[in-house]
Image 1 (cartoon, chains in turn brown, blue):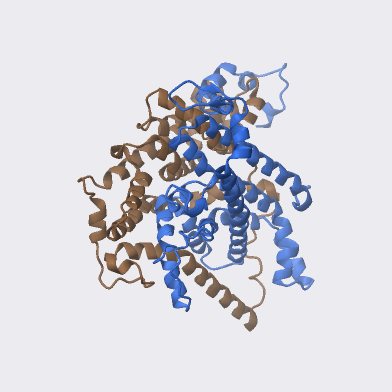
Image 2: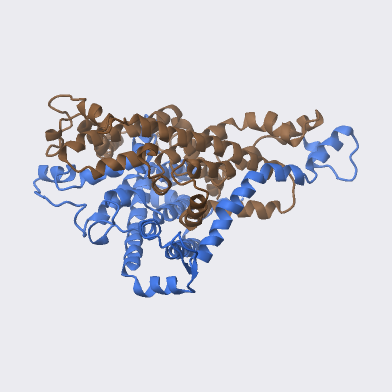
Length: 303
Length: 317
């Protein structure tokens, strides 16, 4: 996998704006205005389903369907109240907390294990390095389906089904090789002089990793943390196969419960909790927007 | 520090250089230490399972009794006697072939527009990215299910423009896969961001000289932008095809876990899931997984071969 700049050939600094510097004529100005109109229409069409979801979550049950309008006749938070507490007295707070625990566990695992491996690939000399690196790159493209069944059998026999171990523990063994690659690329950009200077002061590779590389690797670690969180939080497949006890349900599994309850009265609470489930993702995006965009554009990461 | 990089290993003249050279020496023990989590993971969670599933694909195994050797039975059953498997290949093939080009077309279109010196570019980009941010969540799949239901938003909008429809698009086998395709096309944010990064790398001089020659916007797009961008188109194509082949969550939720009406939404991974975790045919599911791996590998290989004819790399410095 190559980075975008490598693909096109890093030749020029980004040109500010391509055609804007030319003298404006009336026709050009009209074209420009049209461009903004088209963009606005596009955004409205794109975001309409999301806005509709938000508005449906605030409508009484009889108003949700059969109206395109976004503004409810009366604002109504009862869907949120009803959705939050389920019939058996448990709240949606539990799956939210479960999802956050699983996602944070995965984040810690990926940060630790991937940075260790990346340091070895980027900075240490050892036999079979090229082979090992190639192997690592191959695993990035491997579809998960081809390993999931033996993994499931393994965790089944270890008695780990219906625990979070199958969801978290693999991350401590650097199975998301993509992040190793990301960090290797980043470490290669850190000047070797720093390692050499530390070595002169008597640092062994362990200390160089901890004192020199790790602090400078922070941006890549943050990117890894964000994407690991987003992917784990939304990872339906593994959570579906490993977790069947309702106490342990994560957000995707808890939401799925709402579909099974079919009554018309269930739609409001279902939409309300759908909105709630999207909030952590939205908050992360608002805080780390630049890092997320950079992460995608430099490495082709799937958002 | 150019000194160390030019150093001969045999003749370190200063202590400083000697230390620095030492740093370049094989550090097998340290490497082993740093790589040990990855090595364990590779052996037990990636390479091991990869081979184990190849073995299992030649057995019948229900998770309770020991695997029974079955030779190529799973494969012959798959290729000759399983209409559902054929259906899942067909559904997934149509999904990949329609959704990925649609998604990439939207992505490229939007990226080209956003690259034209739009004011507030990062805000527009963020807004167009939003569906992709949420896209893979169960919440959005649930929303999709309701939007395209009989009473859903889509029919209401159709009603507004004078088309009266009470079709449940999810429930109609002719249309249900279309809703899945649309959901993916809606999530064009990531390829769009990648295209934007690529567009900024195209030298402005190319456009300037084209303008002097009197080329219009459309001409410039097809004569400069598109050829210069082919490596990125290719990159996005490979990534999106691989990910589209593995679609699961949206099909599972929108199809109610069953593959939808007439199995019209029975995507490959969903059928694999049913075989493994509903019917406990672990051997058959493992065989399906390996066939998927081969299909994805073959499609990627063909794409790489085809790329020689349409991808232009411009960095021939």
